[in-house]
Amino acid sequence: MPANSVDYAADETKAAVKDAADSATKMSAEAQRAFADAAKRIERAVTEGVEQLRAQTRAYSDTAGQQIDQAQQYVTERVKERPLAATGAALGVGLLIGLLLGAAAGSSSRR
Image (cartoon, rainbow, N blue to C red; front, side, top):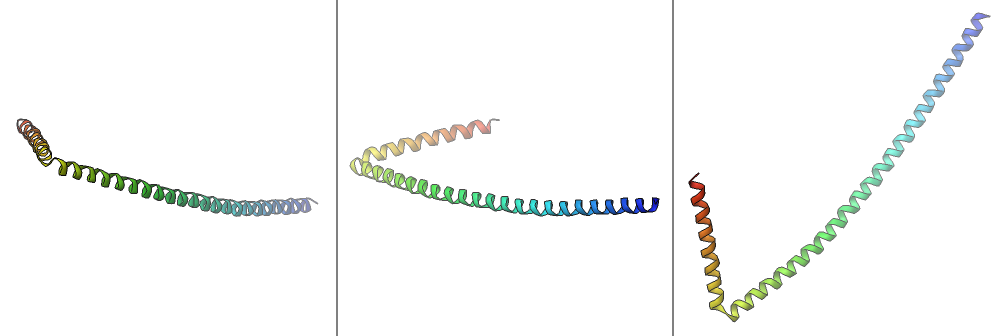
């Protein structure tokens, strides 16, 4: 009789191990499906975000381009209205930049 109870216990253990292995396999498959679904959702969200960013960038670029064109047209009109004043202003700005660069170069050579 002890042999039968040992065989019975061994059979029960094998059945339990098989059930546990089957459960682990099913859980693993479910986890893989869940990860694959999550990866697809994340990829879709990132793709939509990138597309939205591209659209916004195009809009900002177009707006900036229009503003630059308007500024260029404004400056051109002002220079045509007062060419001597524009030349004097440009000369003054150039002189100021030259002085600043000369002072910066002089102070860096003293170090």
